[in-house]
Length: 279
Length: 185
Image (tube, rainbow over all chains, first blue to last red; front, side):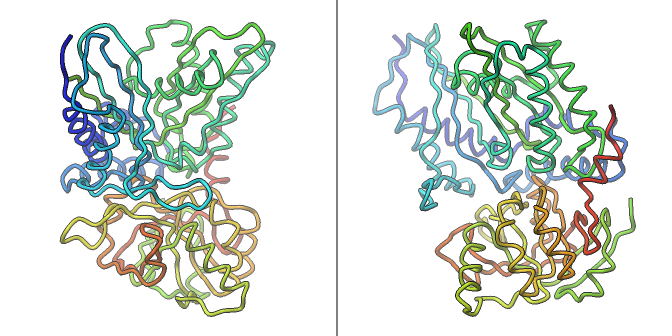
């Protein structure tokens, strides 16, 4: 067994949330540059230039890309040969969030559902843990903003709805979301599983680098068709009208119950933030 | 793209009526911040017939909850939040003389109707361009509801604050017209 002190996890989580909120990923920047090449709307082009410039300013001035620095979502891939020492894993992650959001001047957005009282330190983190082979720990920090998350949905379709029913649901969801989730967006789609698994694999789908090909040819074909249909909606950057409504559609598919066809659409804004580290 | 228009606050009916959807506008002067919790309190005061903590006549409210300011900076990153959540409250503020709202995302028909009726405008700041937008904010101070933290009402001094007209006082809607123009079947 390899021993890892939980303090290392705290420090990694802290650093990842600050990094993710300040430094937009190269894949997203490339996608925005490509969008600028295909966008036809003059106002849409202006917006895309602003977003690229914003990423530069954020990086240079070490400021958050977006003031909504999100709820702190953490994907943890924990090697089964790792022995964690020095304390409680969940608390170690929450402490990393606490430190990162305070020391990185990030906004604290976690609150009570009804009183709306802020928890004050952006905890608790939303932690998804997977036990995997090996003696390493992969930590992925995903600050998830409220605007795009609010436009996300899960639906339990009937199996008769089929592939076309799934596609219609996804396109309709993007259409109804309009300008609200800060297009150009990234669309994560989870097909199959149970209610919660569909949502989880939709969120995980967002983590694949933009511009990468889905290894599952069936899912890749669905992605291609959905992206084309979504970009025909005309919503465009910021919803002001244009060719580029989505930068990418990412699909994850798993088997489901013989009676079900669950579909989840997790919408992500152009401030598509996630950073990871293996320890 | 339309010409760039420069406006200063407070806004008159004349200035508002000159703004048309798709116009790029640079705002200089004072604007106030406010989001869900502050709106709720403002409208509760109106309903009770009490004075508001700020005079909103001719003013612009920016729907924003900025990130904390780093030492030496007036404000942190400060992009718009989704405006639709303020729809239940906005008509009452427009009736009281509010002339402008800055945010992102679609408004309800009731808010659009109130804009036409009371001559007001809905302006879009670029969602997620929060570090860039912060450069146009020169000074920020909390003027009401400090207990709300990032949701407190702040008075911002802005210079050439960049926005696009989404809904004008003539019933125009950039979201509808823009998407219709680029939609393909």
